[in-house]
Length: 132
Image (cartoon, rainbow, N blue to C red):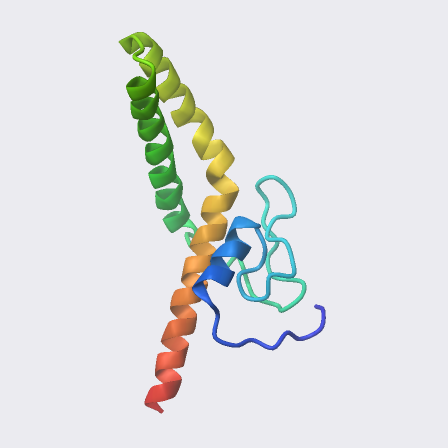
């Protein structure tokens, strides 16, 4: 593990920027992924655990699903509004994007889920400290 990183209250925009960059949501120094799909167990800079428990990233499936629906359906509707296409062409575009987007969005969905959990857990921890 590397040097300790002072951890303050995370800014939402900072944590989301780190999620987009596929970096640790706490410090932003270390990458989340060791390969295309394999995540590191923890951050090499601050020690934050990424893989917390079995089933932790099920929420990322919902994030990826929402992204897929938005891109696939939104893309087909936008293309249809700009360039009226036959139904068969719309279906090809929609089905193809529905197959490709989840593969391309997998890493970012996991990163975003981890970032949202980090923001929520930090907010809970601050609230608990105020109560004491």
